[in-house]
Length: 252
Image (cartoon, rainbow, N blue to C red; front, side, top):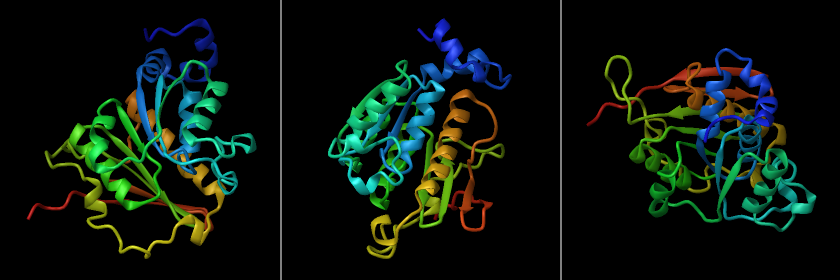
């Protein structure tokens, strides 16, 4: 089932010639099932790059509709999609981009009571949400279901990114960190303004979403060093990347 057709071999030729990916890696991408939470600023480039890369099945979770103010950054949607459910708009865009990719649309709000059964159906999850309650729900579900999570967040001109596998241990046998090791508690309501309140540069979400897609590709194909235990920080105004290491907190 994961064999590549002649058309797929041509489509993914630039992957196949890479020794680190090759035909075997491309077949892994074709077999993979990736859940993307949010078809917004981060989810848009994630979905586009993973679809272009040949990830076989993409699950999209979003309960919102396309609005005119979304189009400045949510580039998977266009003016003709205004008013459509984002999952339907994104599915149509992916079909135009790569007909070999199956899309499973989940038009719902991910919450603690529905996250685990949804996450269990996929191999990797990507967090493109915009609020802490949803981030905690997804992170807890991924930890419980033993699924890697690629999570990012953006501000006005800055972003952060990390990869979580808290169900595994490092070379010394210590548990790998979880989302709650980074953020033990959500900030008080109103402390972190939404992008509607504070504003955001659209291209910033493209940078961070592309980085998320790259981490997913690394996880699926088994290449490189994922951002596990490392928080990547991006300052767009200074054009500067920094990496901060973090560990699991000691119990008790």
